[in-house]
Length: 240
Image 1 (cartoon, one colour):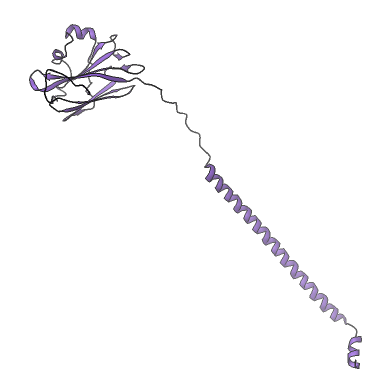
Image 2 (cartoon, rainbow, N blue to C red; image 1 turned 30 degrees about the vertical axis):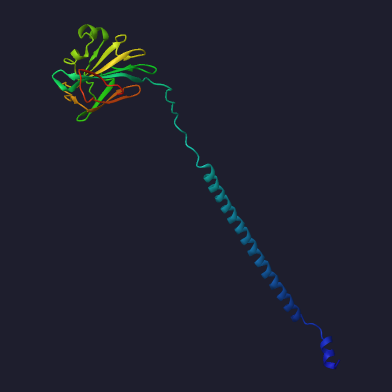
């Protein structure tokens, strides 16, 4: 080892060298500490954002599965198990006394077929008529109820003679207690005078017709039929 190398090894360290080392070390530590704080804050922010996203997704899934909170529903009473109703027992057509080629009256016999009664008071039941030409929403526009006693006494229970004086629509009691309620084991006849001033729609051979009985309370009854090819004084329209 020469003298120059020995002198270098034996030379003491100066204060300046110590300061440089210490300052350099301290700056590095501060930089590392600052970066650590930034990473911690970013991590916290990410966790908060994830928590918000998870909460929102949970709400969406809950609404999708269970739906929105239901609103209170109105209480609706169930319909009655049965209601007053009618059925047809016969339908007859009557030849026009003044024109043998056409029908001037229809007589439809009905009876009760359900619980309760059907009110045949004028205004409490609508009777509609549709033919190949005119249609009427309600032909029962005037009071025309005739009890069985009057019909048998005055008209001798004869529909042919009755049609000459009958209004456009009348209700004739075949058997009952005299009131206008069609009750169990009672029969009423709906008599339509097709030659009346208001209707004026006599039917000819093959002509179709539809009659509907529409009570204020109870089931509607629809009767459809047609006039036979050969018209006779009294025709039983079986199957109408």
